[in-house]
Image: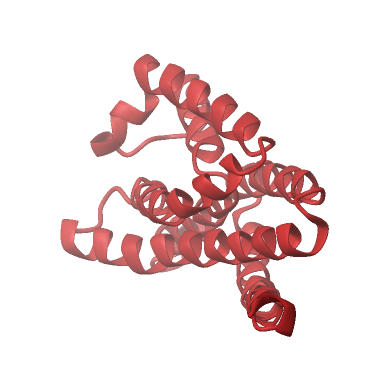
Length: 202
């Protein structure tokens, strides 16, 4: 019944894309690996322009990258180095996964939407968690970073599954996440600046 609603396929694709983009804000490669795996086994359709993502080389590459990314976030100091790279990488990954959901849209609107909605969503969530991790380091000496890292990995997995199985719910969660990350991310950065400006640090 919903298939006859005008532009329904585009709206559904947008919901899936937003959910996947939000997932890349947590972890860059895990959502890409999940999409590659699902499309490789034909569990989900793939835009013909993104057939490379459904190929075995992409599946192996994203699988190795996923394991490496998850493990390195448990290494002190290395996790902060990854944070400096995660925002631009998440922006690219979020844009690619968002664009991969649109088959009949023109090239310009496809990538314009992908950069704004997909890349913007991924970048916002990624930068927010970078701030939360920095605050964790400042307040716990890095002891709490493993909790942040585990939360990010779990968030990436949950959002990826929701995006493919329940895209509307995934999109709603993505919007809520963006709001929460903006609020708590700002508080985290303010806390860091406050500690830097204390008398003992001047």
